[in-house]
Picture 1 (tube, rainbow over the protein chains, first blue to last red):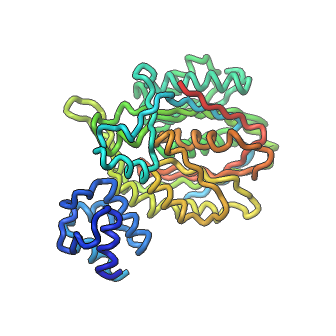
Picture 2: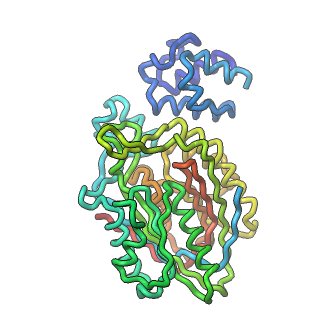
Picture 3: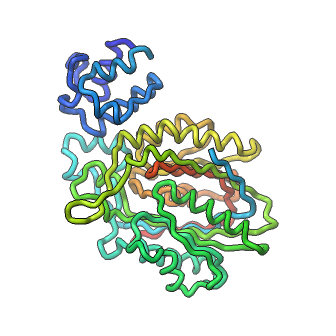
Length: 74
Length: 334
């Protein structure tokens, strides 16, 4: 998954404009990052890449880049 | 995996007791107005059910269900061999609810009674326990009653992750055994204890027990382990067995859809009752079973059904059980 595909996926699931986030964005600062929407994000990532992002990993991460590093080679 | 094959038992009657009162998540103040539609769309849960406070007693509700079961089956109380109660919200922890109900109904002293502390996997574990007991008991026939369900009294007021999801509800099932019956049931019982923190309870500063749920962790465990758990069982079920449908524990739409997509079955329905009933913990499987089957002609559908419960523990139990053409089903709203 390349960077643009990843950011589009995030924007789609969080119902925000496609260009409103970058890899440096701290995901908890996105107004629509709710517990439900975060679940939709990891569900979609799992569907597209087969990679399961764990609750522990999300708790220890800050930026979208942290998540992208996990999925970029999928 | 832990695969079991049992012979001769079948579900004869299922009675569900659910609250008539519906709480609408589109009117729920806990959820910001802008998020309500999305919440309902993605969890699949529009309404959740609550008994009135005086009815929020699993013991009282189990008693009501057993009365109804004895009436529908015409069983005498001394003819029942086992009573199993599955709940994580008993009125009191000591003695076991099943022992209290044994006294209330004046069941026979030769009856086996015990409780099981399980949540969403509980119904299938209970069926396995009942089927095993009846098959191992001396004699040609046997009868068991299985009660399951919970009330939402341990949810914290104002908790956005649990209040809009969970409903009250109980179910009581009558199970019959005949040694000469030729049908088999198949079970897979498994546990991933490392997921114990996904759903757990603790005592707050007011010394009240409250339940917390980590939705992402529940998703992680459900999607990583449940499809394989179900698929392992299906590999051990004879290919000649035709399934009417698959009843999954009703967790939420995101989890259930993700699991259904990964199960190696084609052309099988996975019905949902999430929209109207929410997540009824261990009662969600029998509630969905009754909702799904009550308008079907049971003599014209394939005679087996898949039941799969998963959740708190992290505990998983899946069964393929036979359906009898004379199965009695009842949904009572109070």
